[in-house]
Length: 301
Image 1 (tube, rainbow, N blue to C red):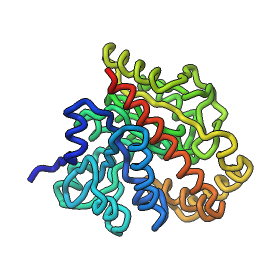
Image 2: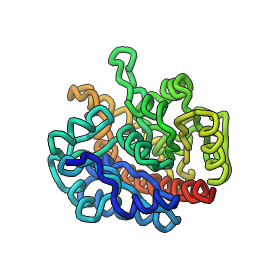
Image 3: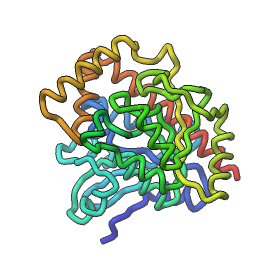
């Protein structure tokens, strides 16, 4: 039995050189509450289509790594209780054991690069966790991007992480970071994380040209940091209060490793009375739109 399946629409688009955007599925199964998760997943795919590209949501369904889901598969990922969070190292195991898995940024990037997709949209990138000096907890997203020629459109890294340490690791791993119409690295729910960026782009066409240059020069990962507008961000004061309380709650409950992020996202959702969820949905859809426009620009050549 083949372990990799590319949806016919996605396969045709890739064969014909049409724009395709990869989408992760962890946000569907672990990042958003039910039933909002399925609705938002469909909206993200519609956003990609509206901007002229083909969406390719990646997930593991009954032992097959699927690149592009039909609506029934999308609903399965959104509704099953046994969908596990799958990073790159887990892909082979989940497929061989016939399981269901939602792919992280790392796993989605790997699979997208494997089939020839160049652009990927997500919410927030993984990175170095707080207190990593003791835990050595760093997302596999970073090392995976360092060896895949993918442009990841995101709103920075999740604000629950150690942002300056993550930026240092991105530099060490030779992962380029450009701000989309901004000189500041975004803070996920926040427009500005407080850390400047060296490079800024103004159009999807400029991003596509950077990708072409990196290809010719044998370089890999590119992060396109796309911030929420200031009038759409989460209130910064509320954000800081909830983050402090959430980190303390996770410590008291002994939550560690990959369980920290979904715990804190859920904590934010509850403590902000849904405001963080609304911001999350806004930023993901904005990133999907920009990624699709980059893919369209890249496909023109």
